[in-house]
Image (cartoon, rainbow, N blue to C red):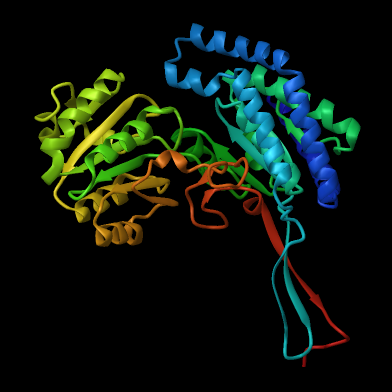
Length: 420
């Protein structure tokens, strides 16, 4: 069985490699036309997609999945429309392929230009969210890359339905066969095989929980862009406007708790803790949030339970919030840099110097002043859909849009120059 699964994965990545060569030569007009056709097809086939997703959701509920994972898995009419609009947004963006990043004439007369080119074949290993299937396909198509998708077992029916719709709309209209491939088995051997195919894959992007990301980093021979894990913090400074801080915390924790840019830990300056935490705690408790607090915060929040050391380092992806009272902006920054995942961090303050210090010293892909961490998103940043949120520092950092899905080459034009 393992050999059969490996052979299937190899064949799909080979097809993707062949498709990538053609995709890299396609014009913007042709790519945009395909994206618009795919968007229309998603809406036209909404019922089939919803039926496939209903089967996945039913199985998840039968397995006893909690609210947050089911929310990530769920597709409804609104989310299908959002997927379609995401493809249309990508079509409206400038084509990064062929963009001249820089250029100059060398003293010896050589004309030197640095030009954006597709990465080639992109592998995605992801969990739960069916919208990743469409976002990844759209971004890779527009940036001239083929994509090989390996989703989680809980969303298999949804993902297969989405890829079928995209290919049935795209291939008759000129999409190269193999441009959008999906691994049709959830066998772990398929993921293991994908991690070893560096002769066909140019990059592998894991999207999911900490365990998935860690496994891919440790086992892959394909270059990896680390994404997703978001132990995000909000620090309420002594000078914060508390009404504003309350709304930001509630939004960052409760608006959609099962996503990577949701807040997981709240840090509050001691000077405002007694005024802020009781009212915030009552509101969060009414919203169903479990509060895990340090000893000092527990005295101000009767509904809270004791936080553990593990809680400070946990991405809950649920209606759970860790809360700690700190004595200074320095202490808040030290806590974030110790426990954070370099994703998104926020300070609520009216002190300009504290804001500047937070921006300088916090190690994260996105740093906020007086705003919710929920904005760390390619669409919110005006990048169209996103491939994920990169939490590393090489190649891409933060939301990964079209430009982040390209590499570059140097083009040198001469008139017979030779090196002496």
